[in-house]
Length: 311
Image (cartoon, rainbow, N blue to C red; front, side):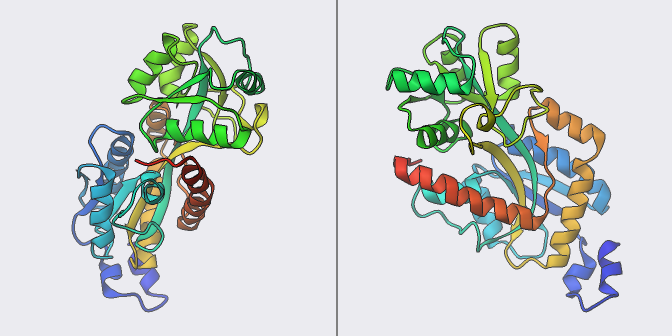
């Protein structure tokens, strides 16, 4: 065992030396969602790597799952798979039962899903620069279809408005399916949606893709420029999923889990399954995830507060 070998070089708490000595629980939100999909892919390989049972436990929404792991014993047996809900929810509502920095020990950022900026084909624009110019010429006349407050599609729109100064009407729909339908039918002119959702409509000519919201061009939709490079420098809006343990979990266990989860994610079949679902593999260090959380809290927290967004 990696932990036993490491123990030979210094004093290591006994629970860390014995890890994992019993089943590990990866706790997440509702079944069927993106966090659930990534979680199930990870546990299939992690059970083999750890030579121990690893299960996915679906416990209601992200708030319930986060609260449970925040209060769990810091021994590596209760882990949390969650996205930006963890670090942005405190900006969206009062009385959130955790502090995203103080109550969790980041293990790894597992995956990222950039959105595609798509418009109705009747709109006379071919680039982000064109769209922003049109939006400035028609303040309040263009509608962006989004998911619920605080969702990736919602925040992508708000970030564009904040950075560009354009006035786009935001119309909330109950999920991405109804939102993309509204865009196809011309009820809305803009939507930030996942590559998997957008690509079939772009191929059929029902929508036009202008750019991808990631920092760099994405292999999910090759050849599409970034929003930042095609009209709005500095723009980035990506839905992320990470794995967290309770605060004070021994660093040796965190490092061990980080390495083993990365091994699973870098397997060719796992990477391809994630790409097919519209998700890119990240597999970061714990320190990188902490840094990303803090930068997102600063950047998007300012947008959320300025716009008065509440969940």
